[in-house]
Length: 412
Length: 221
Ligand SMILES: Nc1ncnc2c1ncn2[C@@H]1O[C@H](COP(=O)(O)OP(=O)(O)OP(=O)(O)O)[C@@H](O)[C@H]1O
Ligand SMILES: [Mg+2]
Image (tube, rainbow over all chains, first blue to last red):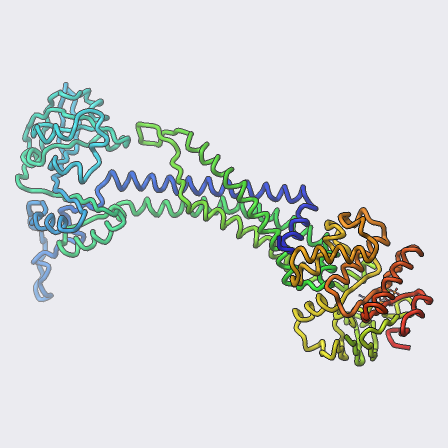
């Protein structure tokens, strides 16, 4: 073994108890750091996965980000026109076939047109409003994950039966409707139609399960009085990260408001940033406290081993050798701290995973989402080692500058 | 290796400056054994630290083997001590956690010119030469004062230095141990042709060496 490292080891062993205490600090610090950061990353990933999977990556709507300039507003200042009222146009995305062709020409991109609207459900004397998702049932599998959440029925049934509908579980239970039941939906212009419940879905998000329904786009069009019109295109991209750019491209090209999932959940993403900053600060504080333990033990050793330092220097060891000896002590404590701290952190992670909880607004309880990625381990290791080396550096620097003559003269 | 000092002066700067060594010029030939004597507090140790490149003078020049020491970098000075200068102090300065053998190994391991096996072989030989074959795996706490001092001598000799500097090496020892240590030092000069510089209060021992330099108030008398 390297002579400097073996001197470092002997020094630490000469202060067994203190070394052990500072080691415990590093072990706990590393463990908590790992567990917390894997929980942070895990919950963020889990949340984003739900978000990305369960919502369209891009939603194109029949809106414009900046309202179109009315012809009357184009006039110059010579004429003033007052009381301009916008032209009442029939809403909907025009030329959506072109948009769909453009999207489908991109490899891996799935897109489907939809008509969204509100309807009133009446059943057994109760009535409640419902969001009607008029979809092309054949596309439902590729652009949405709703099939995964069907607790009864199949998407195929909807393909086979154009008068069918899929209902959210909360909505169904509120109205006491079961699969196979037939109920009435009233459209905004008074159109009435009957639908047969072909399936019930439960996503776990109460607000969604309480309001949503899926039906044939043609039925939605006639119910909402918008024949051959659509007001929304939903898009799934093979790589969710690409959604933002694709969405900008669509909007630039076709002018319709196009919102990527990133934009839709901007506030959430920034909430995550704040949350991560806070949590990392807290767990870093644990490691910083642990670093003080290391600083303490190495300072003590440096003070106690002045004689040894003088001997080594008189023999011909250089100041940088002395620096290395005490830095190694920090590295040794940091490494050993990691060796025990990581398994400790992993068992904490295991423990956390076994805790089930029910997030607000959800109907099912889930385990703590823990991310086991190598990244957390790397961050925990580098943080623990970095803190240890930094804590060792100050006393090591002091040791390196010890003047041997002072010690030897005093020692004789 | 020769040691040449040209008006070496060491002044400690402080509120009241203290002159430890004043205007010392001397020349020590290779293989010469020299005793440094003088009253307590006269500056003998201070001079020895200067001659052994452990401390640097406030003014004056030191030449070792005709090399101007002030022109060397700190790292080169350390290397010079490691290879060519062996220090022995009054209190045995051993690393307390290391065995006798490991203490003797230290300078060789730092120099790294021998293989591990050769280092151990040489350490054992050195300890045998100072009469400690039976104690090589003892830590300093388990050794007597005389034994510890002999380990320190073995360690000073580890890298086969040309110059040995000893500061009252027998100061803390009983008469028997003291005799043993003196004999070793005399043999190093006579048989092994080392330059030996010893600070000592023992008149008889001083006289048995080639030359005696007497220091009073930091000057050669
Ligand atoms: N750091 C210091 N500050 C002030 N004075 C000092 C310091 N170090 C040494 N001295 C003084 O310098 C003088 C020389 O000290 P030095 O140790 O060289 O003497 P010495 O001849 O070796 O003495 P001894 O025979 O007792 O070992 C002494 O008077 C001592 O008190
Ligand atoms: Mg002295």
